[in-house]
Length: 116
Image: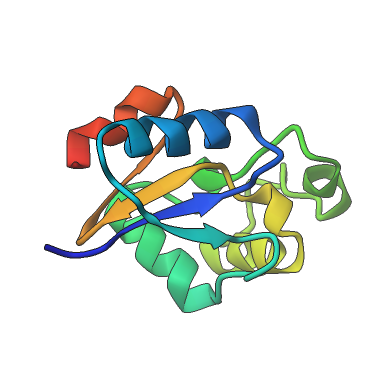
């Protein structure tokens, strides 16, 4: 069985709830603190493929960096958005749980159980 990963921000309540939910199920995922270990463009593209969403759908639009990077601009490409996420990883929606070739965003936390 592949190792389960969680892209985690310990300061985020949903991220903490999702990690606790996995642990309650007896799962000790590999924790990726993505604010410290910023994912590469290839990592983000892989996550998007596993999630089945566009880069824009992975953005946290309420972050200050969203305005700073002018990410409301609909003409921006996925590569532009991914570059902004690497520059400001707080823009990445969280938490993301990955199991093999599938991933889910833990909003609500129970959503990640679909891939466990």
